[in-house]
Length: 341
Ligand code: ADP
Image (cartoon, rainbow, N blue to C red; front, top):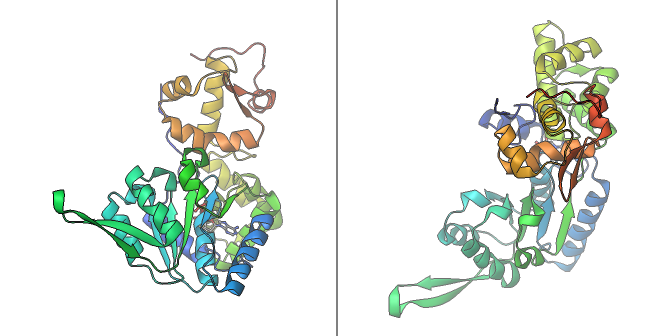
């Protein structure tokens, strides 16, 4: 069976070129950060209260699917508190020496952003505990019987952790964050507003109906909206126009294999396997992973959240179930589901 390879439009990871493109479009202030109203309001309160007290803001844990704005918010917060933003990620910190070096190089008021914080190794997590709580770390000097522990004080800083898997974070680590919040998928109106702003930055026009279609196809995720906008711009240029109208948008999305509600070929394949091979489910994650030749993590973190949001998929105690809506969308009959396999 063909392996479901993650579509470049919906993939969570960024290439170098995309990282540069994202920097161009990344909002630099709360005013430019669209949507997530409640989270924004609570963050503003947190920052203004700590400013009045003359403290660094409490440590912040942001969770939610990729591309919803966790890194962007860390940048906005660092700017707001006039601190440097230091960025790393769980897998990049391999040894306790790496985290000790990051921590001891911080200046007062800096923001340390750790992406994929759920992937930190236990000894590194343990070093973070005292850094977060006491602004100090204990380092072992020397080896063997003569080894001594030395406490190194750190300047006050704010740790911002980001994760797509809140459940994978140990409770001692989670408990050390004073502010924990989830980023929600965006409303279509918010994505339209993001597209409007970014079209101006990219020097291209996009008409309202095309903007609406782009929003419907963006999986409620700004990163995907930005990628699509870039593709639509390429398509418009290919057609020798600086204006993205509905026709251009429709043609471009068709070329990308994205349907009117944002499903790509991977989604269709994923749902088809549940429906046609497992009669709509329930089917366990491991079985699905084997049937699709796809990592369980990728299925859980990247493929499923949007399908659940659309009401196409349910996670039950017995496994994944494709809903009536999914059957309807794919034009399949729930009772007579012919097997493709
Ligand atoms: P995450 O860290 O959650 O994976 P990012 O912060 O890297 O996501 O966001 C990806 C891109 O999406 C950013 O470069 C930015 O251009 C855009 N983006 C994210 N959130 C917003 C928002 N609320 N308003 C406008 N653009 C956003």
